[in-house]
Image (cartoon, rainbow over all chains, first blue to last red; front, top):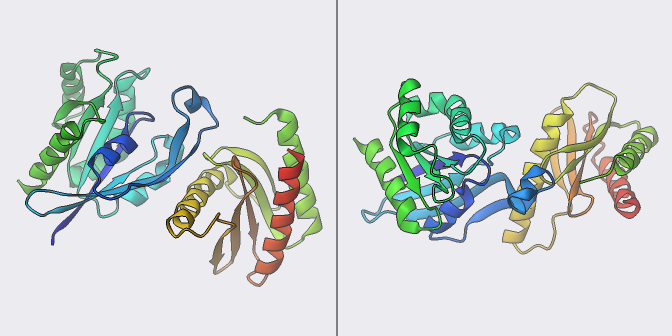
Length: 174
Length: 124
């Protein structure tokens, strides 16, 4: 059976672990530890190595879902986790201080991978912060010479995350 | 978050560890989320990066141990062509990482590191 490896990355607190938990058919393997820095103001724990879950699409394709740590000091894990990956999902917290700046960090780090494979962008917490809106994200990507789908997602809702993943898989196939 | 006094205490303990064991080349303490707290070394290793990597590795060790229901993870050992690196918890928030360039010093490295970790845990 064909298996596809997908990687979820993005800013701290954007919901990578939650998204994988929403999708996974197996208990999610995670490496969350107590945060000891400024992260603690947002959440008690942070991922320091990886998240891992699995999901099967209706046509039987198995997806292996990996989540990266969000903070840049763990960038060595980003490279490790991208090995063999066929697609990337970048989650951006729209209620963060500088969402487009956050997106830029991940686009720059993963640019080569995005060009080799493909990616989708999921913007989270738009209910808490309406700006930047999706048009602003599209403009931003255009200026970077990238054409990638951008979704507003609530990662707690499985259907939201499934739609993003199905779009990514469809892009890989065509 | 550790106070500067606690960081100084850890630095002193690491210094003692290296003074008592010539085989140990470097030792550092990192938080479980990868921030370097204290270090002492005879070489010039990039210990900031090692601190972050150590937190990832320790967390993976804890995750594997929990998966196999083997209690708590005592140490992670990386035995290499030119030396050994060990990782162990000091407490729930801190990890001790020690390095030796001697390939045959695993027992010694573990024993000295364990003793130091226990002393640090007691004094914090």
